[in-house]
Length: 76
Image (tube, rainbow, N blue to C red):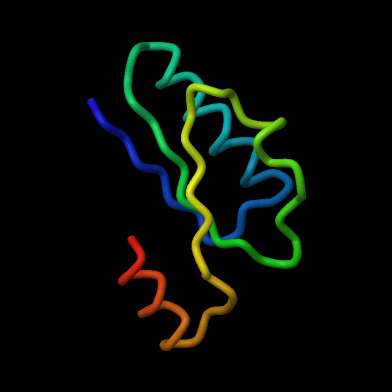
């Protein structure tokens, strides 16, 4: 199965939960990606924090305005 997890804010607790679920699904043999909003609170070095078998997709999700939401929907 292909799984895409989407997280607007990818930092601290949210990041850890999404990461753990994604890595668990990948360990079960699924193809997994995390699409996340690249925001000021997003930590640097994500590739070192998330298992290599999980793809990372940075999105220009910089705010919660209607315009920002629509740009992100187009990217997805």
